[in-house]
Length: 94
Image 1 (cartoon, rainbow, N blue to C red):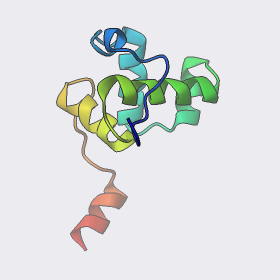
Image 2 (image 1 turned 30 degrees about the vertical axis):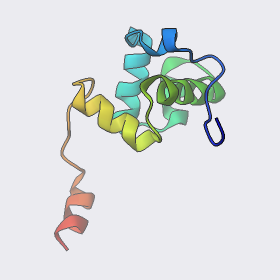
Image 3 (image 1 turned 135 degrees about the vertical axis):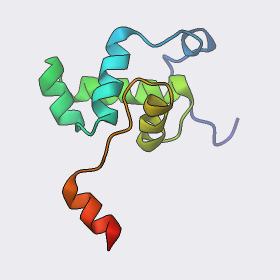
Protein backbone atom coordinates (compact mmCIF):
# COMPACT_ATOMS: atom_id res chain seq x y z
CA UNK A 1 0.00 0.00 0.00
CA UNK A 2 1.21 3.48 -0.82
CA UNK A 3 2.13 5.55 2.20
CA UNK A 4 2.01 2.57 4.52
CA UNK A 5 5.20 2.01 6.46
CA UNK A 6 5.77 -1.20 8.31
CA UNK A 7 8.69 -2.45 10.31
CA UNK A 8 10.31 -5.46 8.68
CA UNK A 9 10.59 -7.21 12.05
CA UNK A 10 7.00 -6.52 13.12
CA UNK A 11 4.63 -9.13 11.76
CA UNK A 12 1.06 -9.76 12.81
CA UNK A 13 2.40 -12.62 14.92
CA UNK A 14 4.74 -10.35 16.92
CA UNK A 15 2.21 -7.54 17.16
CA UNK A 16 -0.24 -9.81 18.97
CA UNK A 17 2.24 -10.92 21.61
CA UNK A 18 2.15 -9.23 25.01
CA UNK A 19 5.01 -6.93 25.93
CA UNK A 20 8.01 -8.56 27.53
CA UNK A 21 9.11 -7.46 31.00
CA UNK A 22 12.10 -5.72 29.39
CA UNK A 23 9.84 -3.81 26.96
CA UNK A 24 7.52 -2.86 29.83
CA UNK A 25 10.48 -1.57 31.88
CA UNK A 26 11.84 0.54 29.02
CA UNK A 27 8.35 1.89 28.34
CA UNK A 28 7.86 2.63 32.05
CA UNK A 29 11.12 4.56 32.18
CA UNK A 30 10.25 6.52 29.04
CA UNK A 31 6.72 7.35 30.19
CA UNK A 32 8.06 8.50 33.55
CA UNK A 33 10.12 11.15 31.77
CA UNK A 34 13.50 9.53 31.17
CA UNK A 35 15.24 10.36 27.90
CA UNK A 36 16.42 7.61 25.57
CA UNK A 37 19.99 8.47 26.57
CA UNK A 38 19.13 8.10 30.26
CA UNK A 39 17.35 4.79 29.62
CA UNK A 40 20.33 3.47 27.69
CA UNK A 41 22.58 4.30 30.65
CA UNK A 42 20.21 2.72 33.17
CA UNK A 43 19.76 -0.46 31.13
CA UNK A 44 23.37 -0.68 29.92
CA UNK A 45 22.28 -0.76 26.27
CA UNK A 46 23.37 1.51 23.44
CA UNK A 47 21.29 4.56 22.60
CA UNK A 48 20.62 3.07 19.16
CA UNK A 49 19.37 -0.14 20.78
CA UNK A 50 16.86 1.77 22.90
CA UNK A 51 15.81 3.94 19.94
CA UNK A 52 15.26 0.79 17.86
CA UNK A 53 13.19 -0.76 20.65
CA UNK A 54 11.04 2.37 20.87
CA UNK A 55 10.47 2.18 17.12
CA UNK A 56 9.53 -1.50 17.41
CA UNK A 57 7.16 -0.71 20.30
CA UNK A 58 5.43 1.98 18.23
CA UNK A 59 4.99 -0.53 15.41
CA UNK A 60 3.90 -3.36 17.70
CA UNK A 61 1.35 -1.21 19.52
CA UNK A 62 0.34 0.57 16.31
CA UNK A 63 0.83 4.05 17.70
CA UNK A 64 2.14 6.97 15.69
CA UNK A 65 4.52 8.67 18.09
CA UNK A 66 6.27 8.55 21.43
CA UNK A 67 3.58 10.62 23.13
CA UNK A 68 1.07 7.90 22.25
CA UNK A 69 3.47 5.33 23.74
CA UNK A 70 3.52 7.26 27.02
CA UNK A 71 -0.29 7.49 26.94
CA UNK A 72 -0.48 3.73 26.37
CA UNK A 73 1.84 3.09 29.34
CA UNK A 74 -0.34 5.20 31.63
CA UNK A 75 -3.60 3.71 30.32
CA UNK A 76 -2.29 0.16 30.80
CA UNK A 77 -1.00 0.86 34.31
CA UNK A 78 2.63 0.34 33.29
CA UNK A 79 3.46 3.66 34.90
CA UNK A 80 1.27 5.85 37.10
CA UNK A 81 0.15 9.29 36.06
CA UNK A 82 2.37 11.61 38.05
CA UNK A 83 2.03 15.18 39.20
CA UNK A 84 4.11 17.49 37.02
CA UNK A 85 7.17 19.10 38.65
CA UNK A 86 6.57 22.34 40.58
CA UNK A 87 8.11 24.43 37.77
CA UNK A 88 5.57 23.05 35.29
CA UNK A 89 2.64 23.50 37.68
CA UNK A 90 3.56 27.18 38.04
CA UNK A 91 3.60 27.59 34.25
CA UNK A 92 0.25 25.78 33.90
CA UNK A 93 -1.39 28.15 36.39
CA UNK A 94 -0.21 31.25 34.52
